Length: 281
Image: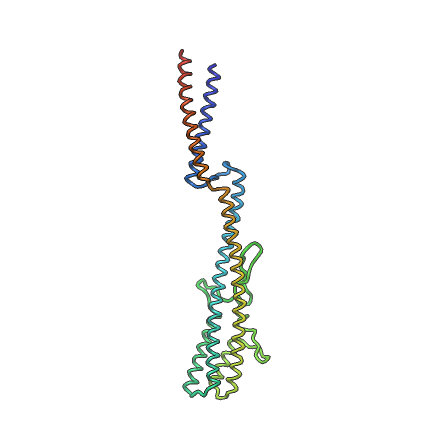
């Protein structure tokens, strides 16, 4: 009889210890907000959480590279817009020069401004960002990885913007066109100004085309960013369902387990006293 009673007491102690441990685990889940904090608590969920964590890390890396790509793309767009404005101003100067008679001082002023425009365009096309990276790639566009199996060109090459212009069947560069404008502004020959005006218009059309292409790059980056952001949200929701604590359910379970533990401890204390008196008697 004593052996049976002793075994029962031992079993009851173990049961109360397990109940106490469940209460402790639930209290930790409430305080941390995490239902699963170690593999032993839910092995299957832990594996899924680990896999989702890896996917989140990769997703975060893609978000970083997309942000980097967008920063480069925006800077390229801004520089192209400035080049557009400068070429528009050069065309305006040449229109004035071609449709009016300028005195020597007027000619000199136009030449000086076109020289400044030429210098500014060169600086914009060869500029580097705060990290020392050229605003426009050299020779070949550098692809940026933005999602699984996808890498995008985020800016054009300097050469694609500087060259590729044909005026009267002759290949020209932006710098060639502005150099021609310098010469034509100082020339007394009206035909030189008319020819320069045609070249400037061709150069401006080329710049507008480059802006359109760069805009398409920016649009593609935005589309990918939306998809990657949607994936980020989806991963967060899936992880939350597996890992986060359901406060209402957990608190209710703590309260129920506390009542059970208190009742078990009270009953155990009464039984223990009776058993002791029985043994003495």
